[in-house]
Image (tube, rainbow over the protein chains, first blue to last red):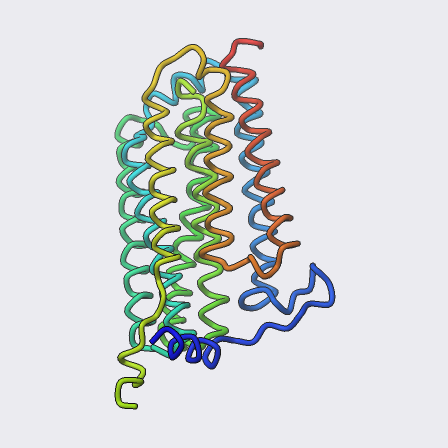
Length: 203
Length: 100
């Protein structure tokens, strides 16, 4: 049975060439341009996170007080929701490799639903902050909080549109490129969440 | 031959599920750590969180994004994330430890 499966896997998986250079773009999953985008997005968010951490040197008390209003359990739950969404996106690629288009679409639907759940929880969190009078102009902490998490949320919305397009044209290349964007959204949140919510709390 | 129809194929998903379990465990671990109050954590807490970020990022890059076949890209992205998190952790530790 395993042998049969292995043969099937060899037959269905994309053949990767031996790269001429370890930096060769040809073996990257999906479109190489997506990887250029991923690198630039990490640099942009990285710069914003440095600005956030650096600003604490100038606003120690403001940061300390501002952190007490963060909803850490909700953000932890939201992180798990987004990571699970990433899992479904990875399932979609795996199904796509085996030409199981129906299951790939179903996995994309699962990823999309969880993406919407992430959005809903984030909007709830913003509402919670706004009800406390904490808006983008309150202080440096919340300016950067809304800027960074809002920019990330914009990526989630864009990612959801990409997942929708993938469901319409679920070829192997499209799935690899589109889900790479979704995983990038995942990856960036995995960096943002601990730096904003966990570091500096008592840690 | 009938059994080899596409519908009956077993597609391996265990590696992805394992990666997801690790990611969730590391996320919960970070949260639990944030609930603890120890003077020692003021110094080492941000570095532990930075290590957790790095582990999670590596799992996403290798298991979800499949970068194991592009080691140079994997190293580059890991180094970028390492630089981001270590500098943030360093700055936040500097403030939290009262060196300012």
